Amino acid sequence: MSSSVTRAAESEPSQPAGPAVADTSSAAAADAVPAGRGKRWAARLARPALAALAGALLYLSFPPRPLWWLAPFALALLAGCLRGRRARAGFGLGFLFGLGYLLPLLVWTSEGVGPVPWLALVTLESLLIGLAGLGIALVSRLPAAPLWSAAVWVAVEALRARAPFGGFSWGRLAYGQADGIFVPLAAVGGTPLLSFAVALCGFGLYGAARLARRQPTRTAAALAALTVAAPVGAALAARPLVSDAAEDGTAVAAVIQGNVPRAGFDFNAQRRQVLDNHANRTIQLAEDVRAGRVPKPDFVLWPENSSDIDPFTQPDAYAVIDNAVRAAGVPTAIGSVLAPETGPLRNTMILWDPAKGPVDTYDKRKIQPFGERMPMRSFVRLFSSDVDRVRRDFGPGKEPGVFDMAGTGVGMVTCYEAAFDDAVRSTVQAGAQVIAVPSNNATFGRTEMTYQQLAMDRIRAVEHSRSVLVPVTSGVSAVIRPDGTVVKQTKMFTADALVDEVPLRSTETPATRLGPLPEYALVLLAAGGLTTVLARRLRARRATRGAGA
Image (cartoon, rainbow, N blue to C red; front, side, top):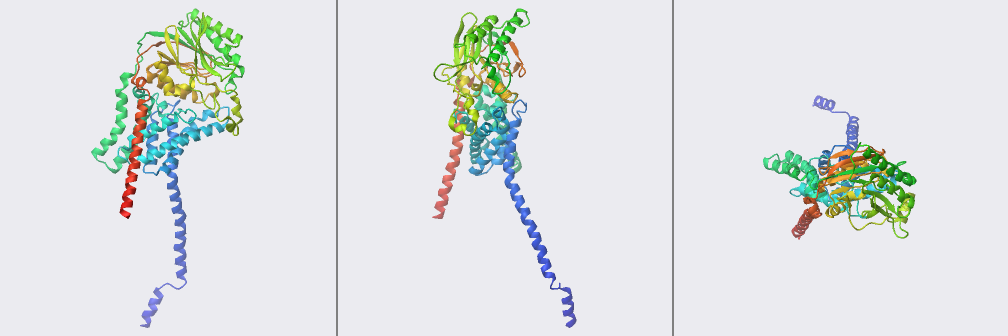
């Protein structure tokens, strides 16, 4: 008995060993706590990081990079971040997506004025994109979620195009697709339908991947594939609407790029030099025509701000312009700033006849807020003294401008206006056989802005089946066919003239005839999806209350 007890005592650990074991397990537990917290924080940060990455991916799909196909993958990644999230989380993730997208896309707005306007604009627009994230999160669990999500995206694009301060359409999905397979859809339903197709394909890609992983059945695979294949198939079916054939004959057009003394906001500090540059390049064009180096144009286009000196009040500016137009011997559109004694300034295109002088004008209708007019001037001055660069606001015109230039109806869409559906469509409906987009990008130097705008012009060419002529003070000026192809373009900050024979067309595309109706229909579709979600939640709450009673 005693020996048994002794052996048992020997086999048991001694008393001091107890605390040592306890210390070891406590240390392991202590190490596990920060490791667990680290994993939780990593999990929390994963979605925000992926949302911002998705935004950056969408930015990379935009010109001057020909990576249009990245856009659907960016939206597929966004859909994965938003799937099943609550409304508040959806808003936050959408906001981060907007920052990742718009911070690099709109960095050109800081050129010459510093980061404050750029950051303010990006923050405001990202908040609106946050609404898209909120809506997409809400509809993400509905059947056919990609359809509802794409409609929500277009609804927020419609909001951005209208508010605040008249809207800011820059950065629509459609504007990054000038080289893409979806672009024929612009001729069917305009930029809203084109954006919808890209969004549907992107959200459909995520839906297809998710169903393939969770429900690898033929029916699920077919439904998922349909959301991707449908926009591609629709775009292929719409290709017959895209044509560059001449319906009303052709015209030889000349686009003048006179260049500026220097880039940035001080480009027009030498306004007379800018005017002389364009006049001299026009006179050189006339000499080239006489020498047989280029064909004689039927009309000539100068860019926006090519004469910031009002020729109606300044005789010397009138004489310089008149001399150049007489040398060319054909109708010429002159971009000028008119300064009446009272009232706002006018950003005006003047139709100048070589024999009669000025015969018609068009006042720009879409005036750029914080650029050509200054809302909340005293408040904005608290953040930036650059507000006082705009000493006198510009006022908007009221009617579309179509100049009769040697028998050709040339519609004026001045620079910023190209971003707005109604401005371009109303010009075509007013009889434009050719669209002119006189622009001034000298303010923004060599940034990507000019290429982003050129992509918009290409989309407008397909949307309305019109040649688009783009005279720019400092580049890139271009000649665009009705099928969106750029056939001639200049280099930046180089005086040049483009002369080309362009097809004239008068047929209205379905997009021209339908106008905003496709956009309205998609907004209603988005509203239907969100209403369905709200109705389900109300029913669930009532059922819960009933069960509790």
